[in-house]
Image (tube, rainbow, N blue to C red; front, side, top):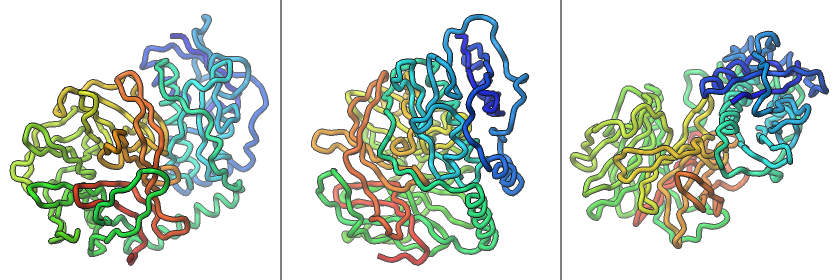
Amino acid sequence: MRVLIRLSRDDARQWLLSLCTGLQGAGHEIGFALVDGPTTPRVGTTMVYAAQSTLFGKGAASWSKLAPSKLPTITTDPDVTIALSGIGAADYTLFLDNRAGIGHAPLALMAGHFPFIEFRTADGSPHVSGLPSIEEPEILPRALDQFTNRLITLFAMVMDRRKRDCRSFWSARKHPSAATPLTYLAASLAQKLHHRATRGRHRADHWRIGIRPRREMAFNGDIGLDGFSLLPDDGARYYADPVLWHEAGRDYLFLEEYPYATGKGIISYTELTSDGEAAFPPRPVITREGHLSYPFLFRHEGEIWMIPENAAEGHIPLYRARRFPDEWVFERPLIEGLALHDATLFAHDGFWWLLGNAALHKSSSWDCLMIYRAESPLGPFTPHRSNPVLVDARDTRPAGVPLLIEGKLVRPVQNCLGGYGRFTRFMEIDELSLESFRQHQIARLAAPEKDTIAGVHTYSRSARFEAVDILTPRGFAR
């Protein structure tokens, strides 16, 4: 397909070369038409970008100026025209937070606002949309790298012309007060100095696991965090990603254990007493070369299996319990060559479904949902025809085993808008097939406003207990 991208000269930036590589690799012929037109005010952004590039390193330098001569052109009539700067008629026009043109991105990011991206058709209808995660919003060069990398993902979604659940502009978002370039730069410098001053000391906060007796509750509105007792730790490690398992009348808790000294997660477990307390400190059961987390367990043909996250090694490892709960045998990768974060398996409609997030185009793993289907949980798996099916920091990354509630299939997900695992949403799946996917929120699990808890990012329950992990200040007690 011949694709013409129309943009203003001031929007010619280095990231467009990566966009060309990606689209050309998918078999498209790409050309650019640079035009003069109204430009978005960028007062101070060049100064901030240059100063922070010196302080923190440029990363991929995606927002650096690019000589127009380096952009390819096409000489024949295009099949598709895309207006990147919001100038002129096109088949698709880029909008950020309901405003046409990519030039709004730097000022929005400096204001602490992650732009909602839409590609709209000529009649104004949204064709592809997404809300990307920005993992380092306080550093403009890195924030722009992540933003433009995820924009490449959305470009690819435009070009494949697959049907997706396209969301309209999210008008309910709270827009923060605009930060001036100087205040933004000062805040980032203060944070850098703080990190340098506290390097090597104990962390100010870390993840902890809370356990409470299971409550039969309606999953609607806000669900409280009262009644959870915290799993003790020695401060030299954090515990996260709880998975509860009831077996032969006994209750077990599997988790990610992250010793700060090694900087690498391992899978550990403990047994729970009748009161929901740990019978002993968590004991390691699986370690690998790379970081492990999210010890997802499932039962199949009389055996217990585990697929911990192992994205660092680029595949999903499949383990079988040779002796439950403390002896596990690595069988093989569940899907070879797939770096999927928080892979979650469940049976539905006669198939097994695998959902997880991928860090496509070297961007965040917090916002990009992938789906696979198989007749057996051991594979082989067929990818969803619209992968990635959804780009949204609010409700893509899995946060635990899907639940069957009053006949409804509900998946816990992480809200990563503004930071990793800020709170847990419960999303009812409305439609799931290899052609489509739709969901909507029915409840959420979050700390009250102004609470000291900064995150809730996994939910698990068994016949007797519920478990969550929460991000707490050092010395937190409840």
